[in-house]
Length: 399
Image (cartoon, rainbow, N blue to C red; front, side, top):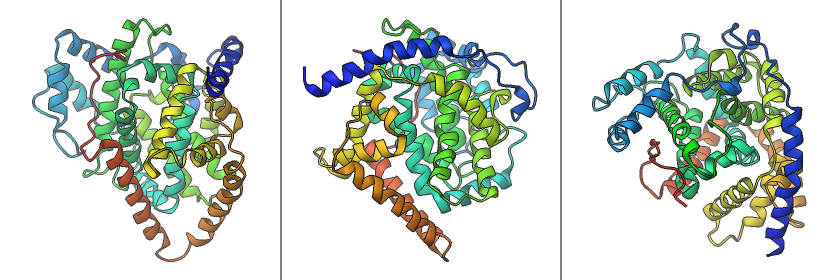
């Protein structure tokens, strides 16, 4: 056994007791729906709530053997303003027609302000959502195992391409406009989640009951907007009150479109931070699957910039700087004696330099052009030049 593999095994085995203690100490659901966008609700523990609308429809698709033809029909649906594909089974078509509607409380002015926020701070938001959120997800046992043992775990480049599409679409300037793609990506992702709930309990490697509960969705949600806003504050990135409210709003809408009940979606940042403390903090810990996925993801990131793992030590240091030592240790990210101090010094200086430049005329527009070029490059690399189709999986991990 190599030293690195031995270290990874120690991390995971050492975390087993910690995870057990965390699970026993996890409090009962106490977050009040009065702090949600709905303002009211039953207060049901989200660990025991899934998706009553999508799950039976997708289960019926499997029972009728229609997964392949449904995926074929859905490939033609790519923009928000396109009609629902005519080739879908009636029950799925009815579901999609309902699921694609924005909530009544969606505010187009705040969605537009979210696009303005991305022009100003998109490079940091994308880094935190992509690398930061990705590394946090592998430190969540339920999520790491669900990814690892589902079909996507066997082809992480394809899995990341589809996840990245969702992230790119919500961060695009036209996310929920007619010519955008976020509504489509959200509804398709909701169908994927329902398929995983149908398939994964059939895997001999999955012992955690029905996956992707409302609680699991909330855990993931907090690794994105909540975590990002906290880090932007820590990094002293300038965020106006209007942009802060807009960024929260676009993720409230996105949570709704992904099937999270309105009674669970925080209405304010204070409510989000309080909920995150209850759902995200106790959900995190080390697993063998998470360590392996982290290694694959960081290899992929290094390969994007320099084939042959030349830049892997730098990527390790950047990931460690973003998510911190505790989660890095859980994920098996090694310390880099040369790169760690360099990133630790250079990154805050880069943020400070950005904050001095961004108020200048034309700088936000120019920065967005550069950000978009980088995003498109990553997208092309992940998809190997082809289209990225979010599709219903037809099996679990085949190994």
